[in-house]
Figure 1 (cartoon, rainbow, N blue to C red):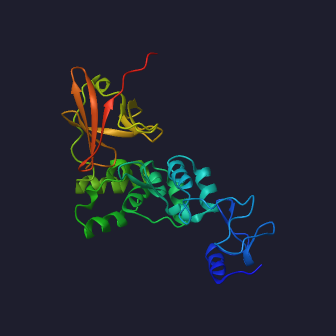
Figure 2: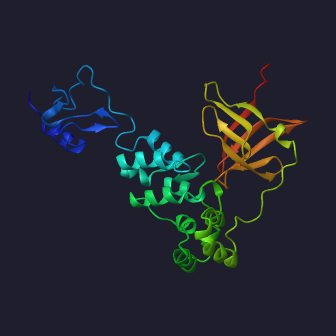
Figure 3: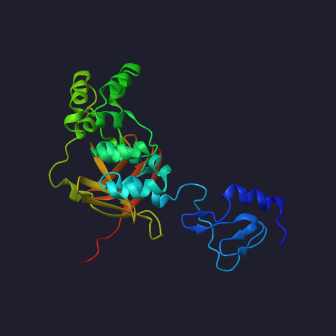
Length: 287
């Protein structure tokens, strides 16, 4: 079978003999798939039994990105398994919603997981002000603040302040905690507007904005208070700003506003900064 120049170029780009993507056979040298099945050029259709190339290629598998960031909060063994197989995952970042980006190292930094942070750094994670604070690297934190006065007020993932990262580092980070307390401004600023006890029930429920199965916003009380999620999505904590208005965790410029009539919300809108969606409360299902 004749191999075209275009086919040779494609093979070189995909990585040579027996190349795989996430366990999927892609293409071998001289247009041969592992197992001896020929596939000479992009103009030809894939042979029977050949798996299609994933839609996310040539980017990282989003499922692996989400997983490495998630387990970097808590699970050293899971992180090690992932980054030893794919070191590039040590640099991975995930948007939990509304631009709340978090890296694997960012996850380990605000949870105080020193071993996970050090493992990620050995595999190529990019150090940050937040990882330095948790790891107790006082001179690094000092240098950041000296170079960019006021940077200590910049929040980390989920809106978690720099001082909280330092406190998560425990005793080794105590000098960083003392420094940040002395400098000031690293504690996250003014506290959220208090939400009266029991007020959450006004907002809890399902809100529909379209006919699709996922065209639904779910508001519930989670581990850290009121949270909002699209159907089948990750819940985002809501910070109360007053007047039935909130912002999602890690996205201070986004506004979630509830329209309340009587004792309950009848609709919710999301603005970023313009109106993105308006959803109306759905009738409660009978238990």
